[in-house]
Length: 177
Image (cartoon, rainbow, N blue to C red; front, side, top):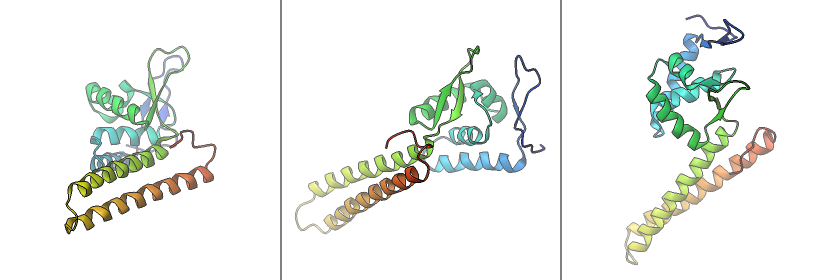
């Protein structure tokens, strides 16, 4: 496929049939996003959807996303629920259109940090349970104590990164972490 700066082609202004003309480089990016997010516990299709929405110049409907990525509408629906619930994408609609469309959320990058903070806090809670379950003097207590310290360090690091991000892009960050 030939790459183009104009990603969306408009055949009929009254009822557009959006087709995404993806270059091989953008296709690799979208597939790479799929693999990245699959390694993060999100289905590969969800990562591909995120990648597509990151490069799309305008909102896309679920049908358009399914057609562009050549995946089933059912897979799109399942992943859209998870992605909207996570705050990575947002639902939107255009005036005079009944179809729901999706965009990459402006708060998505902060949302990824929020996931990191929550994950570190959950790990800390588990380590605290492990520490409480171990008898005094047990050598495994050191691992639990270090796991708690590690979790605290991660939370502090994520919080500092969010603060720097908000300082750098105050108008870009909408969601409080």
